Image (cartoon, rainbow, N blue to C red; front, side, top):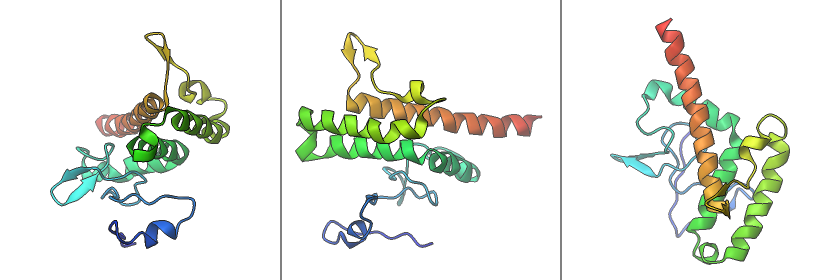
Length: 157
């Protein structure tokens, strides 16, 4: 499937997908749901693919697709905190934070709920939306490392 790109003057592609925002710079690893914001030459890779061996890209992408519900919330948190309208509006961010957990909680109920639920307290302050998004990114990073370790472990055996 060919990648589609567009510029700021033509949002027809983004507008044609009503519930799924399109990343302006898609990760160069095929089917990756993350934006390719780290450029290596002329192509952009996401934080999970950059530096990885190209032979592992499909494994990494599989993890990201398997955890699509978390990836969606990471991308939503990033968009909110990069938006001029929202970044300086703590009430709006707090509302979006609550909405994000309402979407994610039913999908992770049980085994992963305690790991992903908001509310960690650090230095006496409850976690905010930005911090939660970063924690979700770390969680996904751990899942990627797990799958790569399994491959490396199987190769060594």
